[in-house]
Image 1 (cartoon, helix red, strand yellow):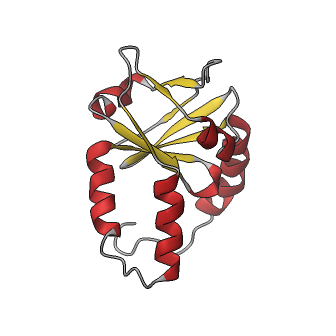
Image 2: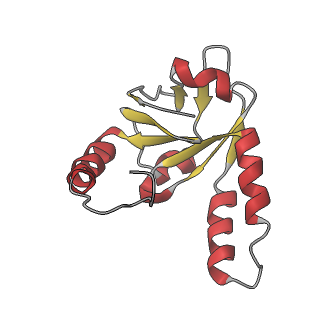
Image 3: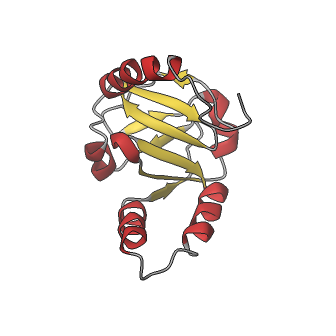
Length: 143
């Protein structure tokens, strides 16, 4: 499980240092791909395999499933972090998420998300109020 918020920076080669607490779970390999809200999703390779197996069940006749898979897999990049815990984010993915220098890396349960710092702060400011104001069960039986 990935938890917490971290603020690394991209270097001039498009590399990002993964938070130390995430490195062991990602050391064997990871997949970076486009996420919703213009962030990047980072999955341990094993978790990405589980997602891939689930997506294989979607009927090829379902247009929304085809569209989702095309965007997700066409933008995916697999990598093994170097000894310093750095990963290189390809230019296409940096452009998609508007990553330039200041980033936010968050733990999001089974995945890590990489955000442009300004985009994350705007997203969080917008969503925290609705999070605090939830007056019904979002996940029945959980809260």
